[in-house]
Structure formats: structure tokens, C-alpha cells
Length: 222
Image (tube, rainbow, N blue to C red; front, side, top):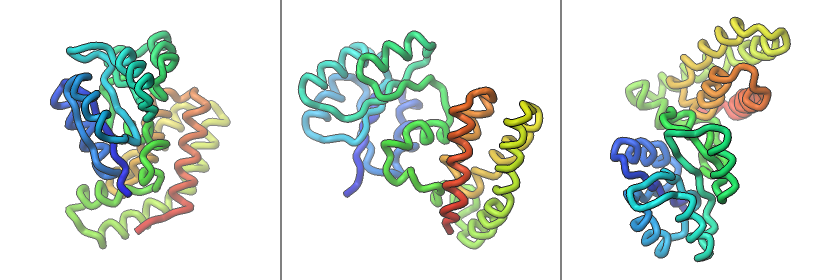
């Protein structure tokens, strides 16, 4: 049975970005307003709600509270262009399971939503890789084999750089790793790389990256 997601976003470009990012993992419905979203939720059960918190007809946290009162307990992720620690705290307290700042990359979005995407738990996105490689499955197998061959050494370099506090060395290996991710469909790994690049001192981000590397090595894919 396919997962079903709801994207609530009034900006057309942002709505299409979110829709296309989720499309490989299930059916994606979209809404431009909270009223439209409420009507869709009355007719469908969703595995995930991805919600811009500032919409023309109201605020997402208030809408979510009303949905909870109607027994809609689908996990909801907030999107906002203005996200600081205090706003994140308020959004999480209002019932969102995650709050994300805009703009963000497709890889970072998928990484953040991985717990709710089902198939996204796979280390590999073959559709993305084939698109980048002109549809050649032979090229995908070849590129992914080379990527996997290098990955253990890159993991060692990441661990060493983290242990030594070597930010320059860490940046170098992350840059190399990220460059290859798009050609082999390593979307989840790419998102983890981007997160650690943004916050090199974030221990949780480092742990997440190492976990994604281990997942890729454990399941080499095509």
C-alpha cells in the first residue's frame, strides 16, 4: 500500500519542490490554503503532513490544533522561512514532530523526513541517480561500485578529522563525498553531509552521517 502525503504551501515553486521531493516515496496531495488542507484531511488519511506555518488563511499551529481535536494524528512537519531556536521550540510544543527552515535542498528535506518516508530508509535513490546519468543503468552500477569502494576510506577520514578537531580536513572529505552522492543516488547520505557541513561541531550531525555511511555500505544497491 502506497504512503500518502499532504503538502500545504501557498508558494507555487515551494509547493512543487516539496511535491517532487516526496513523489518517489508515495502519493502526494497538495493544498494552497489551510481550508483546502482541512477538506483533504477529512477525506484521506496521511502518513505525513508537510505544512508551511504561515498561510493566507491562518497559522499552521492553530490549524494543527484543530486537526488534533478532530482526531487527525498524522505526523506534521513545519516549514518556515523564519526559524530560530525559540520559534522551533514553540512549533514543537504545538504538536509538530519537526520544524525546518526554508530554503533547503531536496537531499536535506528527504534526510529530515526520512523517519516518515518508508522507502526513503533505503540508502539509495535509483531514480535520482539514473536521471543524473542519462538513464544508463550500466553507468549507475559502475559509478556506485566506485563510490562504495571509496566510502570506507572516507569514513576513516571523517572519524579522524572529528577526533582531531580538524575542520579543514573534515570539510575536504565532506566536499568529496557530497560531489559523488548525486551521481549514485545517495540522497540520505547527501543530506547528512550537508547538515554536518553547516554545523561541523554538531555531534548529533556527525553521528547521523556515520550512520548513513554504514547504511550505504550495508546495502550497496544496484
